[in-house]
Length: 255
Image (tube, rainbow, N blue to C red; front, side, top):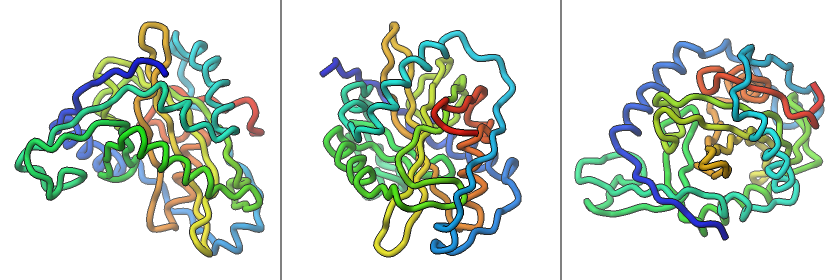
């Protein structure tokens, strides 16, 4: 297992970042796309319409593109340890005045260490231990339903695209200011009892002395459902430009 790095997570950064998310989401909210029932969605196999971000690729992107071959393999093999072996550990100590998120109800001084999992369109931020993250990730993998489809495509675990952004307070809050975050954006359909939901997840990496390290994940989950499909499609086709300034489709995914 590779050496794990530890970095502090500043509460002020999280709160200011969440405020930016809320403001920006209002600005770029697209017209809601009506969705059918899960049964009706299952009968459609339309894929996402490509809309690449027209920006010159950053210098480190070819290296990340080559590394993404390993990410793609790990997703197909449901290899959660691939991510935790490369994790940069985030550490956050609760203060006495935090009344939301993971520190709500916790005494001052409570410390969380692990992998950051944050919501792309909500104030959800949690730090999971490596063991808990592997368990949480494995459960989502096991719930993937390759036989199910919706208007975005099939339900199997697929790497859809790669993206990058220079960080200026945007989530996830673990990428240091001034450093580029690189996203591997994957999607699949998860079974939840008798219902199904699409999972869209961006795995975030940074380049550390030539080595690609895992910084955390962005979960793209939306309610109500009438807004979900349009947002998922944007993430899977390069249309969520506030989160990244360069996006490209993974070659294995048909346009």
